[in-house]
Image (cartoon, rainbow, N blue to C red; front, side, top):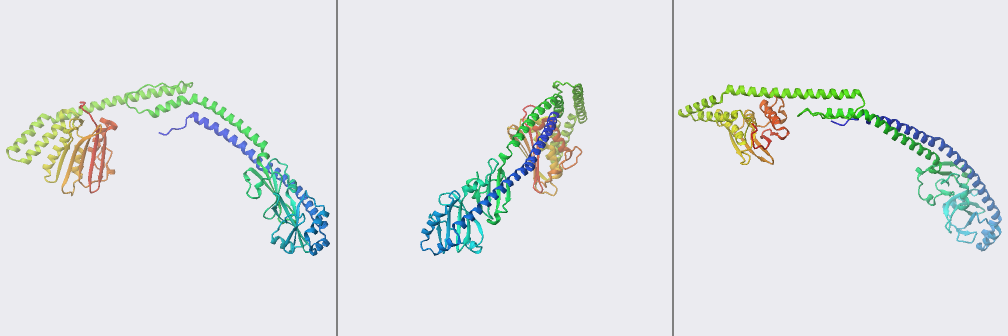
Amino acid sequence: MKNKPTISSSVLAIVSGVLLLSLGAVVGGIEIYKGTYLASSISSMAAEESSSAENSLFNLLYEVIGYGQTAFPESTCSEFIESNDKEKFLNRIYEESELNEDLYYDVSIYDDGRFYSLRGNEPFVVSSPDIEHLKEEPSSFLILERSAYFDGGYALVTGIHRSGLSLFYLLKEETLSPFLRSSFEQSFTFLYGSDSLLVSGIGAPDAAAYQPIDGSKYLIVETPANSLSRFAPSSRFITYVSREAAFGTINLVEVVVSCLLGLAFLTSGAVAYLRSRRVSRPLSALSERMEGETFEGKAEPRPYPKSLNHEIDVLERSYDEMVGRIYALMAEQSRDAEEKRKLELDSLLQQINPHFLYNSLDAIAWMGKLSNNKDVEKAVVALARFYRLSLSKGRSHVRVEEEVAISSYYLDVQSVSFPDSFTHHEEIEKEAASFYTLKLIVQPFVENALKHAFEGVEDAHIEIKAGIEGKNVYFLVEDNGIGFDVGRIGNKPDGEGSGGYGIYNVKERLRLEYGSEAKVEINSKIGRGTRVKITIPQRKTSGD
């Protein structure tokens, strides 16, 4: 029987369920608060910071445009194009331009297939599609890309086409990054163009341009850069706000509340369990005894745990009285059944009168011998020996060799009634012959084989064997008959199913005599015969 929950465990489960639901409700409410109100507030603040950064960058780009108009007016551009020594010309322009070195890395100039650097350094080369894009819109000022520069930093490359020249201004990212400063701890902002990173804000990871950022650690706030779209199409700000920093306080509150509820859960659960156990323990003990009561052997009183409930004491006493009465009735019934069996056996033996039966059969056998009727003599002798061993002076146990002999004499009698219809053979291991067995456990299976197994079978044969197997004695009854479906064997004493009363009787007698130590195994295949194996424990005395 499967274990069922006790009252203590049920009470504990209810208390645990209520507290866990409370914990879930509180934690869930905090999570909803974090995911709605706090997240919305943070998103609004990040959007305001992005708007402020956009205005600052917009004004800065206009400053760059103004510098370009000042340093490279149309007359200067024309002179540069016509100059034979463009590097020398640019050196003069550089000395006169007062280039803001805190903002600019350099200015690269593209003319007639070549790049020149305003600083006189190795010029920065821009891809041909960007140059063609500026030529198609000569009045535009565009943000083209973010690129690594020669000294290891990054530059925001902007460009303008005027008077036949393509001018590329390289703005230092380290100067632009402070505009994207986030007021949240462990947070940072990026400025993106239509498909790539343009500027990294303060605190941004170095590898941000090359691998995605773990979104589970950050709240991601994206804001379109409407004003900057004039210079960088489809530009936008993306702010990564650290969840740990943003939700630090509320997370601490959540942990404290969870710990308090957990402590309440442990305390309440322990108190509820201990209180309910004082009630449920006596009931559990009574329930376990009820489930484990087999009503075998003798009734044994068992102590119960001390109970504080009068009702439970009444239940325990009533149950003990009921069990005692049941045992007494069972013992009385067992005595009555045993006495009835003995009386029936005595009556049967009186009716049979073995001495009269043996003497009569001997007389008939001598008459058959005197008249030279061998079949009569054989049948009568076999029948006499069969009954002599079967009755065994009222004993219920015989030696193994005598049990096999009973079946052999039975087959001899049947062979006279049905001449030439079957043969039989008996074999007994020497070590097994002297052990004792319950009487008449083999003959019913032999009789069953004769009645049901040999219909339409030629050369019918029955084999009976007895031997030792470990600590057991076994009997084998094998035939080469027509076989049958083993599932049809009945377990009722009314003869239902193949095998009838005889097989049922043998199984019941074995169970009552040997318990689980005795086994009857029946194997049969249609058209291939049947094999019955009976196994009993070894006994060297009869017990009668």
